[in-house]
Amino acid sequence: MTMRWKKLGQIFDTRKHGLPEGRVGFAQSPQTLVFKDFLRIYFSTRSLDVESGKYLSHIAFVDVEKDLCTVRGLSSGTVMPLGELGAFDEHGIFPMNVLRHGDAVYGYTCGWNRRVSVSVDTAIGLAVSRDDGLTFQRLGAGPIMGPSLHEPCLVGDGFVRVVGDVFHMWYIFGTGWRRYSDAAPDRTYKIGHATSPDGINWVKQEAQAIIADRLGAEESQALPTVIEIDGVHHMFFCYRQSSDFRSNAARGYRIGHAFSTDLRHWTRDDDNPGLEGTAGEWDSDMQCYPHAFSHEGRHYLLYNGNEFGRFGFGLAVLER
Image 1 (cartoon, rainbow, N blue to C red):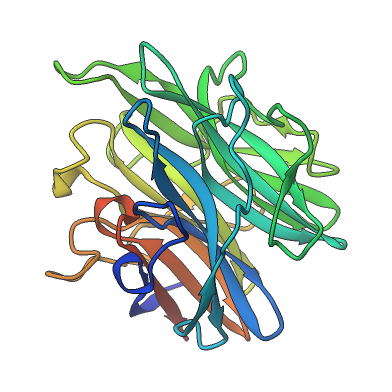
Image 2 (cartoon, rainbow, N blue to C red):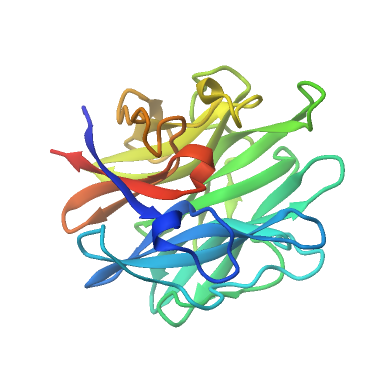
């Protein structure tokens, strides 16, 4: 299937539309919750930890009209507080994937906590909303999925879909850290798959990277999102080199793609979507953190641009 995506431009700009009070930048990893007459788009923004001088990641949302471009308003309160002292999500939540389940909204979080020898570790948590996604409450203080025997670190970025009676999760797991130069160590991570009967208790395909590398063994893959189009499952994700990627555009994030007919075996095909940046625009140097969704019979892709989403996110639509 040849995919032709039409870029609709940047639909949320932190400099134009603002951010909730106390937040100092970024609108990363946009994820949708579709209502009858509008869409709610969750994202991760940041505050500054005065004690450490480092960022903390928080969940916020923006409501947009059905045209997907007109902003209704921003979240005003705390969508979900950070974890308590020593918790897996003490220092941030980034990203959060949401889906409706019965009369609730499940929020699958990626919790961040700082380490000493390396910068962070992550795990996946679950929070539930009973007020249509305005606020979320954790099921418990711990994660529902974390590092294990053969996935030693950096389990996160969970994206969940229910197919039949089975919950499927695509997520990332770290293969390890490496010091490439005199700079701080950097990590490598791959995309894995897990299933669950209830969305809470998960069984992994332990340490099985399901997406083939394009850049070699030190390719890092992040934020999978899966959508069904004409009976075929399509995964979009972002990938980069594991080092020198923050300011070197040639080694930074770009959007990848794979397809499957059974949700387990995937064929990589990065030429579709072929969603490249536009010179001089907000996504000229980087395209990252995609999220695919359907709305009124059409298929869309949200994604972040330069500087890992510092200035917001944009939208593309699949042309038939």
